[in-house]
Image (cartoon, rainbow over all chains, first blue to last red; front, side, top):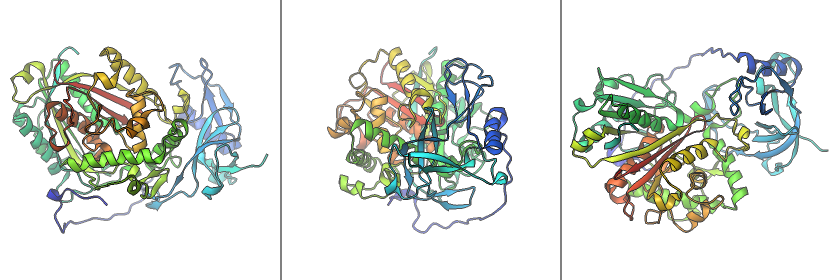
Amino acid sequence: MAQASPQKQPEQPEYISIKYDLPRPYHWSTGKYLGKLYAEAKENKKLVADRCPKCKELHLHAPTPVCPKCKVDMGWDWAEMPLTGTVFQYTYQVYPLFDPHLGKVFADPHPPAIILLDNGVYMRHRLEETDTKKLKEGMRVQAVWEEDYERRGQGFQDILYFRKIEE
Amino acid sequence: MAHRTAIVGVGQTHHASRRKDVSLAEMVGEAVRAALADAQLNVKDIDAFIFSNMEAFEGILLPDHGMIAEVGAVGKPGFKVTGGGTTGSEAVGEGCHMISSGLYDVVMVVSWQKHDCGDATAGISAAAVPTFAKGLVTGAVSEFAKQALSYMKDSGAREEHAAMIRLKADRGACRNPYSHLKIGLTSVDEVLKSPYLVWPIRLYDFCPQSSGACVVILASEKSAKKMHQKPVWVADFEVVHQEPFRAGSFGDPTGTETYSQHVACERLYKRNGITDVRKQVDLAEIYEPSTWEEISLYEHLYFCEKNEGWKLVERGATEIEGEFPVNCSGGVLATNPIGATPVLRIAESALQIRGDAGEHQATRDIKSAVATALGGPNWTALFLLKRSL
């Protein structure tokens, strides 16, 4: 598709490529605020957000020590989020992308979505339904948790996806 | 600003997917030499250097390693800037600060990205903060897909309008000897046949990952007036921060209404007495990662009323021969070496103001231009450039 700049592209480029494959054991601290979200998800299968003492806005993505708008310390006021909501918007990945964590090209079959939780907080997650013809905005959905305690501890990823519900 | 800053030299490489024929240092050196030739300066005339590049996108740490000698910066003062999409604008802004402080006379901004060594989308999506962002984003494409959906719903624009933007970009790119993607598109239908990456963003709706470099030489008013090259003045600039994923906090769940863009525009336009951008400014080089983002930006940068961006596209107002040309160079849709992308916007605007853009020179006389950038944690950068102050 792309026409390379002809001035700069030799017809048969010769170069040496080096391949290597090493495990990379990283550790990442959640910190106090995001750690609260992680702990509630792992221990109690609860989704929590912190609330600004001044403007009262809830911060789910991610819990923050300082309100971005009011620029004041958030304190330690936590609210439990409802686990049901409506699909505000969704999209779906068609073309796979390279994921360095997996070391391979991967297309997540679960459509990424913005879900309006029943208390008015927007949440970014993914949907269970992979048949895009069955998706529609305004669809009622519910969070599906990872039931294996040992496998939880991944924060937002402790929720596997949102499943369509009939009401 | 205490001391006025002028752009006295610009240079860029030919941009391509792969530049396997050169090392990072050699590629950047091409742009440095081009800018010095444009300014008719020797590298010894440069007082300080600023390096502009997005680390991780080349898959290595400190890609400036091994480059300092090639650039001629050994023993000179300087900084390195790494700020996501707006990296290049921040770097040029930093150069303006250095000159307006009165401490430096001539500053070179060296910007590049060599995407044949790495993968920016992998850097963005999979190397995103693992504790709260991983798994919820598919690079930048998914974010722009969300914006496109919201925009279509709110404004009544159709996919044809996005296709028109790609046609415009491609026409510009085919006229620009340095641009990366020169597809040679002739119709809207051709664009609409390209496959989806993340619905509703098609392959042709999105920017490429380019390898290339761009260099801008800045000088103080006193020095600029002694130099050969016609100066282009940095009349004003603004860089505004925002938090990502909190777009919802500002009353907009999909990030369509970027808070930082409104704040940046309000400040810059107010300071410069701009009330009608299309009448008071002659041209824009905007940072449009997707076709849909270009249409949205027309509105967010106040080039037109809300939900009317697609109407500007429909009547060709922003074409090279239009009343308010936007991205005559082919823009980011054609050429995207990320660390250099905002610097290219500024360099291309300067060429337009000088009348030196060659085949992609706008039809009308360009005396002033707005050059923008977006990226990182929803940051917005705006530059106002003028032929005379």
